[in-house]
Structures are given as structure tokens and as C-alpha cells.
Length: 387
Image 1 (spheres, rainbow, N blue to C red):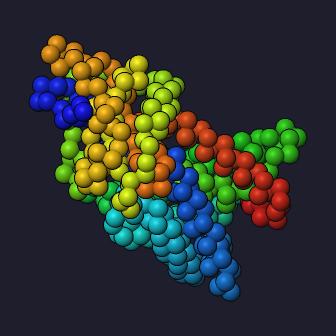
Image 2: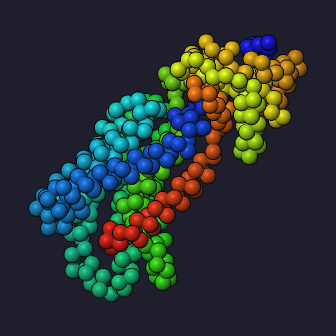
Image 3: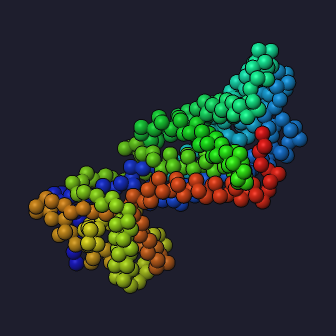
């Protein structure tokens, strides 16, 4: 039986997933669940605010209410309820990777600052719009120009005010992640992307193409997708409790996704054929496994305690070929790393460490959101925001 222990001079691959807040091989699952949680949060907000008989809590109040001091109060309540509900539903997914309930408090604080600031600024602009000089200029402009200008102003204000949300969440994330200051701009990016999609839908209408979009589905989906992708890009601090020991490597990494996929299927078949019986423990046995370009298992490392204790119940000790790493010459071949889990049910799970590229996930999610928004608008035309 070959030993799997790596000698001090033998190059080994790094535990890449330990550097990320979200393990790369869980990106698709996490993104889908996070977007769904954000959408559920927005749906619950609608139910909660509509249950309140005061209609000013559902939509932004009129200028008259703002001047009477009711606008900011409505915006504050709306922001607090929105922040608590959306952040709570998001945390149900995020708590596995960020076990800190303060995400809910950070979200509520950010939403309150966002809505109240936006309401105050919109009120000032509203007051400016009733000035005689502004009214005279507006009368000279075409209706299309007024609509476009109003949309640009609303988008710009919303994007700027969304910095409050990004900043509040960053104050929490910086304790667990490194080089994450760019998170402050993530909600603003979501606002701009949503506005671009809405403008795209409006442009199709002008071209006589009937392609309505539900702005609520679009907004929730794009916000959830933008934040999920950004969370996948964050890296943990080196002293994070969830970080695994990292070994520096001289072995080049196989990064071609199609090639890694093929190697993963070959590895799954190789292990599945050699694994003749299921283990008796209730825990899954989780390993990091590295293979060469020809599919040979070069080395592996146990991730959890059960995997260490029951390694002999797996085929890994018999299949590993440490000689392919050429420890004597010091030249290591290109390696691909996989997350391999032997489940008590007898099933085998093999996932590439690097997972699906974020660009692919982003493109796929945006396509799904666009389709869902169009389908919702088609089935419920009364829900389309015509303002």
C-alpha cells in the first residue's frame, strides 16, 4: 500500500478554496440560493408593506408629504423593514460561510440610510422642479427628454445613496475578508445594471417590440446576483477560523475548465470503480485530491477528522501514485485539484476546486433573471411599474 504522506521536499498544491469566503466549487449553488433568498425577501417586503393601510409606506410619498415631515418617516420605516427582511433571508444562506448575525443589522442600517437619504435628496430636487425657471425650461423640452432626464436623475441618486448599504455591509465584511473595500460600490453597481436592463426594455418598446419586464423581479435578481458574485470573489483573512492550512507550491495548476472537467469525470469513474463498499460512519469523508494531466492521482489530503480516521475505507491509499510528482528532480507536473467526498449513502461526489468561472455564472444568472422578469410581466401585467 502506497503512503499518501507528502515528504517535506515534495511539491504540493495549495488549498485554494480556503482562501475564498465561498469555496469555488460551491459557487453555483450559493449564487442560486442567495438570489432566491433575496427575491423571497423582496416578496415578503411587498406583503408586509401592503398589509399596512398607509399607502405612503409602499411607494415613495408625494412632495407634499415630504414637506410636512411624513416623507422621511415613511422612508425610514420602509428602509428598516426592507433591510431587516432582505438581510435576514440572505443570512439564512450566508451564515454557513459568514456565521455572524450582524449581517442583518448592517443591512438594516444601510437600507435606512439609503432610503432616508434618497427621500431627502428627491425632495430637494422636487422643490427645485417647481421653480418658475425650471418649469420654463421643461416646457421647451420634449416629453421623451423629460422622461429620460428623470430616469437618469433617479438612477444617479439611487446609485449614490446605495453607497450607504455597501459601506454598512463592508464594515462587517472587512473583519472576515481582506482587500474588500471595493464592496462599498457593489450595491451601486446593481442599481446601474438594473437601470440598463430597464432602459433596454424601454428601448424595445420604442422599436415596437413587446418585451415588458417586471422591475421588482429584475431589481431583486440583479441585486442578489451582484452581491452573490461579489461574495464569491472575496478572500478570507489568513487568520480566519475556517481557513485550512495552506502549503506553497511549485507545481503549475491546470486551469483550463474543459480539461479539468474531463479529468474530474475520469477521477470519479476511477474512484467509483475502486470503491466497493460504503463506509459505516454517518459523516462524509472529504478530501482534496490532485491529479496529473493523464488522470493519475498524485496526492491527497484529508479535510475533516472523519476523513483522517477512516481513510483506509476509501480507495485513495491504493490509487495514489506519489512518484508522478518527481520529488527527486524537484520538477512537478501540472496538477488539477478536486474536492472529493465519500458519502455514507455510498455515493461519490467529485468537484473541481476552482469551480465554474464567475463570468459564466454571472451570464447564466442574468439570463435567468431576465427571463423570469419577462415571464412575470407577461403573466401579471398589472405588476409592471409604469412610472
